[in-house]
Length: 144
Image 1: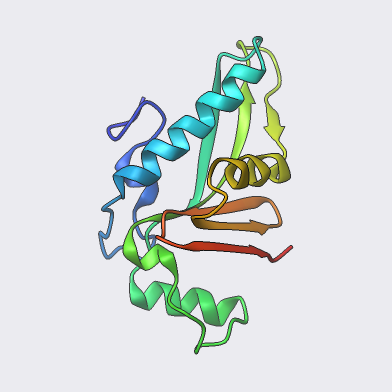
Image 2: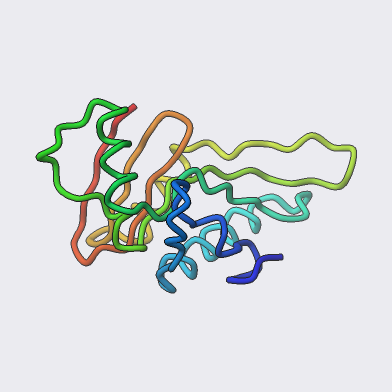
């Protein structure tokens, strides 16, 4: 469906400020696709799993704006979104036309990511979304 993979288009990861930053880490896309495939396999009635990107890439200016808007300390570590290997997202089951979609619980998504990558990558829990990044070391947080 997309120009990066079956679920994703490059534009979904573009920085929203208009700076045109839209590179995407291959491992990020591959791992998110695998996650979608896993959840798709759990529901034989769905026709696909949609993964909705809330936030992909961020340039330094936009990232700073987001930190200020959300009350984060400016001394906090740089966001993994700056490096093109992070995404905040949510997922849902898509059924045949005329059938209501069903959101996949964010806790189930984060739990599966933690199971798949117990000693690496960043996994964050937020209200109504999950953060996942492909950093080298492990990082876990819960900001709900």
